[in-house]
Amino acid sequence: MSRAKRLNEMIMLVNRKKRFTVGELAQEFDVSKRTILRDLQELSEMGVPLYSETGPHGGYQVLNERILPPMVFSEDEAISIFFAIHALRHYLSLPFDIEYASIKKKFYLNLSGDIRDAIDQMYNRVDFVSAPQQEEIPSLRRLLDASIHQEVLIMDYETGEKTSVRSIQPIGIYANDGKWYCPAYCFLRQDYRVFRCDRIKSLKRDKVNVPIDLSTIDLKNRFSILHRNSETLKLHVELTKAGVEKYRTVNWTDIHISKRKDGSGYIKGTIATHDLNFYANYFIGFGEQAVIKEPVELISCIKETLQKVLNQYD
Image (tube, rainbow, N blue to C red; front, side):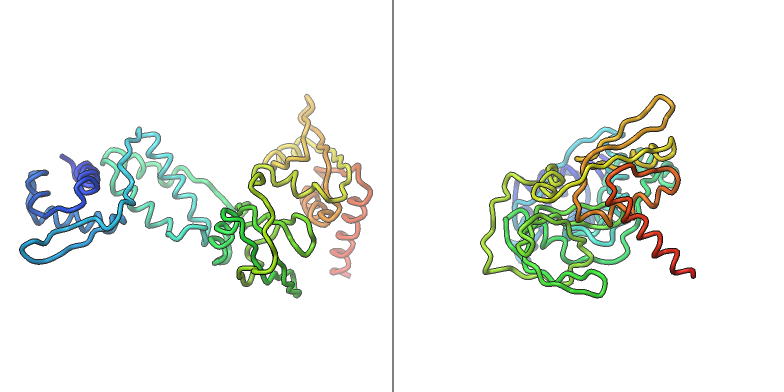
């Protein structure tokens, strides 16, 4: 029996028995006690909560029942899971109290030798490139927990050189282009807003504001909720072929793209007036590949932004 298979079967066995001795395991798996001790050390490093007792009636026991039963994956499934975990390396902070490198190591070491060989051959030949997260964000788990339990939090929020104090009720958190975002109900604005998690400098529970019912609101419908009470403007942007290819990586609920036979296209939809600066900076990045047709407010905002840039070089 391979070591990986023995470890998997050992997890099932100790999870079922709860209390056992090294001798019992050595007899069960037909290996030496020294080998079992090494295996138990490996299980402990993998997160199996083992507790040892010395003496004539001593042995090992499992502290709780939080052990996942082993699952059988095909080769392609195992490889895809490994590289999905590998892609997390771009984020310094995750909303879980773990390190991705530790998970990847445990998963890799318990794969069969032929699958590890396949991963080794692919390791430097396939990648999922993402903008790296630049700084640690300790508030992610707190925001996630608040969204699950519908709690109101007080945060110090920093934008530029200004810091404001706001009460928010998070809807959830999501990562995009190397940054973490938190859509939430803002009690100051009495409306929904999206906050950059790296700009949140402190969090504490709000004991004054009563939570509102957000049980039917999640990340899937966040865009429609964010614009529900906002003044909106119609958007129409003409795109070249290159512009279409660039825009197709975006997924905004209220904005849709149409492609023509020659490869060019256009996008139409609605945008909130308080997001004009965001869209101005976004479409400036398209250069000559995008032409704004409407709204005129967005055109004016783009001109003002470009003029400020030009003034820097006077």
